[in-house]
Amino acid sequence: MNWFNADAIIANLGNFAVWGVAIIIFFETATIFGSFLPGDSLLFLLGLSLATIPNLEKFPFWFALIIVFAAAVLGSEAGYWLGKRLGPHLFERRSTWFFNKKTVARTQEFFERYGARAIILARFVPVVRALVPMLAGISRLDVRAFTVNNLIGGFAWVAGLVTVGLVAGEI
Image (tube, rainbow, N blue to C red; front, side, top):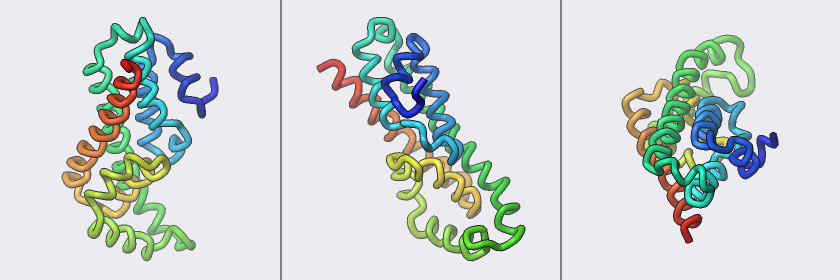
């Protein structure tokens, strides 16, 4: 399977497309290693497929939204906790050009200034959507503030793209 082609992914997953997309979205948002996956395209094509593919037409749209939304939010939460847990070890070890205390201080300043906007808007930028949760955890951003903005951003991203795909498919 070509993991860079959203259409091929959905076609190969068949009746399990919603579940497969949810798993892929989780891994894309949880770690930087999953950021190469085509999240935006998958969400749009999932909506399109829910409207046009006979077997998927039977899958309730609202249920698909809940499943994929939960995967997106849980993926970012996992990224936050990975950053919170592993970040101190990376930045307190040996100082390098990137892993140093200055980077942590700049990240904390960034979240103090742009916190909510950064978390919400990061959803719409491929590599950034995996990086921001980890950086938020590393910089010790308040977990409640992160979670609230993660929920808002996740809903806007998932519901927006899947709904646009569904409407396009119905046209």
